[in-house]
Length: 100
Image (cartoon, helix red, strand yellow):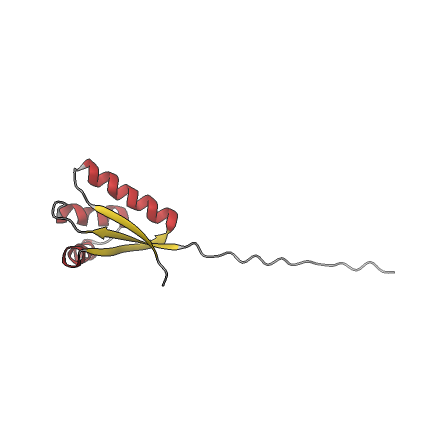
């Protein structure tokens, strides 16, 4: 009986990593300049975009500044918080699952 070559194909479906919103929460102490600088330094926004997001945070009480995979969102959020505390600002950064 002839030997047949059997080829197996395995399909692995790799799930996209869960995405998380990085949210800045407005306060009355953290300066506009600090918020804008953190958006440019940590999230690489242009000055114009950073200014618009900063005013959204100020006017609405909070704003989503990025939607990223969890590990990256956590790392960037921590980076902002360390910088804020170093400059003695009480800025709060929240992470929320992006369920959209």
